[in-house]
Image (cartoon, rainbow, N blue to C red; front, side, top):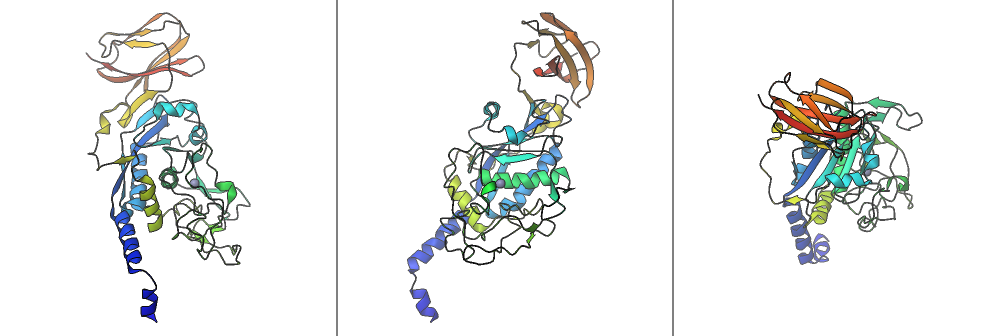
Length: 385
Ligand SMILES: [Zn+2]
């Protein structure tokens, strides 16, 4: 009986399937990730270096066992008073993002935890995703009351980053096409094979429906207890079979902190989707020394374009700020630990003189705003003595 069963398969097919999935799963891939961190000019609303590292170790825990590795590049800080308090992900479809776009990696935009809670990936697969704000799990798993159990912001953020990274690398939700309200991607125009048929519990349509991955059980979404990550509802699919979804799958919505793993099938899908992708590095890159940048560990890139010019750099006795349009502005001088050590208000002259006699040698940020606080110029300057 057993022998007959084996013979009914073509041995070659079985072997080649095994070899292919083996090769795919053994094959190491390295994904380049560019962290972009939203901040105010003082750097105080930006997430810390330790929090950024926490997100990396969460990704490592989930993906490394499938030979998927991440190369975080040095973060840059985006000084933008609006985006730092708005939910950054809600604005990911807007043009500003193009200023920070990298062709050869995934752009990861991280808002402040003071920002509105928002998170999404621009496409599946896609080159960018964002997350901001404080997140928690509903205290009542039936969502009848919107009371959330706050968890450490860095923990929930890391959990969300792992999920959005899954999308960026080509993974759908485990409930794709079963829960229609949560399968939309707002900036998506080219989504890869988005299915519209729910996956059946018996797995018979798993190759064409749902998340297109066969070892992730059909998932109705909802009905999870977020503290145990267990499904405790009793819904059935169209055949009348009871759902038995996997609440610990990163691509489910079981709860923050439930993001424990992806399956072999999901890892193979990522490797298939990423074949030949510009996001791949050939090999791990040497660790970069990100600490040489200004603001604890950071390079500042201003989101404002204006006609202001600041010189010389480095400067000795005086800094000149050219204001050709004679805009009325405020100027702050900020040191590398974010303290404001000098400020000037209501300046309007074409050439503004900023004396440096009271400043010791080192790096400073000159932050020029209009009278309403919008950025006109954010620039690092070095004072030599
Ligand atoms: Zn999602």
